[in-house]
Image (cartoon, rainbow over all chains, first blue to last red; front, side, top):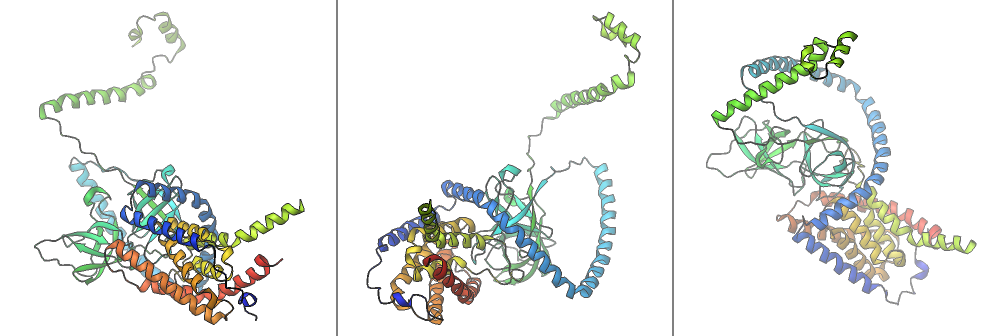
Amino acid sequence: MDVLGQDRREGLGRKAESRFVLLLMMLVSVLLLLSSLYSAEASVFRKARENVLDVAAPILSIFAKPIAYVQGVVGDVGDYFNTLEQNQALREENAELRQWMEEALRLRETIAVYERLQNYYAGPEATPIDAFVIGESNDAFSHSMLVNAGSGDGVERGQAVLDDQGLVGRIVDVGVRASRILLLTDVQSRVPVYVEDANLEGILVGRTKANPSISFTASTDPVVFTPGQRVLTSGAGGSLPRGLAIGVIVGAEKGDAVVDLYADYARTRMVRVVNYDFPVFEEAPEQGADEAPAEAAAVDSAASALTPTAPAGGDPFADPDARAAAAALPGEPEGVD
Amino acid sequence: MDKRAEGLSRLAKAAAPTLFGLFAVLLLAAPLRFAYGFVPTPILPLVIVYFWTLYGPSYMPAPSVFAIGLLQDFLTGGPLGLWAAVYLGVQYIVLSQRSYFIGRELSVVWVGFAFAAAGASLILWLVMSLMSGELLPLWGLMFQMFITVAAYPVFSIAFSHLHRRVIVEM
């Protein structure tokens, strides 16, 4: 095989005239880099990122379809070889889940009783937005994913993103039809969490490794946790709802707890953006003033309950004669009752 | 009419490496996940920038490299200008060593690419460590660069056929 460029090897005495342009472009990119390091969240950069996201989203969606198809097929072929083990594992899991279901049903009944007993106010319902992963940052240091839902679908910055296993990350950039999720492993990711059964609060910090770690808030109490304890979002700071499952503790490192995430980023295909509305706290009205509006509300609700039933149940205009009579007495419609 | 078609085809050939580069960035952003995410995606734009800077610098001018890097910055969500600076740095190094590498066997050029990838990794690691305020683990980056270097010959052979048969000739 002859070597590319052999014939032109001698003619290389001349300087590249484009050296000046190259240095200029380098200067521009270094300045850009410095300014974006200085103010990473500047609105100009954010706007530009979101616009590029919108432009690239349709192309990435086209790429994502055949990739998902091929991976589905390859995954299926792989499954043929371990059907037996998978069957066994699934059966065991099924048995275990059935026990959990029994417990869940029992708990549901208990909770229903408590709800009847107490003055219980249900929290605001979250209405999830489903989206497909169309891209991700295949980069050693920045860990993010792109999904095909944006502000047009109701996605907003800061919302939590879940997959079928647990928390995936948070929305950081929102275009009109695509948005970016900052994964929990990204070096910029900070999520307030608590450890179940340990009375511990901390911040889950991404370290660019597969397992992020919890750095605990400084306190005089000793930090005691054991591997296997569950980690959930604490909702501190009001950016994420409380109680989203994140993972389990697998070990300790320099006083921090290393967390194995429930979410498996290599398999995340479809995600759910949770647009959770935080409860708005209103000032409690005074005791005396409380009575009147309650009564008014009761009257209102009674009236609204009656209004739709009155024409149907009372049926004053059921027969045509009565209707004619009513038409003849336009001044006093109450008389018909 | 004939002249216009010729002009168009010349334009397409001149723009082809740049378009490959932009396409490679989009491919890099696609969720390919080789071996269930165990094998990182090779950084194909780095190969393209290196290859055409070496064999056809007029097909890969600095503004093209800048555009490729900037698109990658936008899609990865990192600090703007990082990948642009990395690719332009690689281009600068390659241009300064071009007279040595041009006309050598693939294996020599391959070693050159490994050095370029190492240099690029160093810039990336320094900037990202500076940004996060702590020394980041190097393992993931080294593994990805290793995969990229390992994949270089395949792309190099494909691109050299393309460059010789389609872009330069005819």
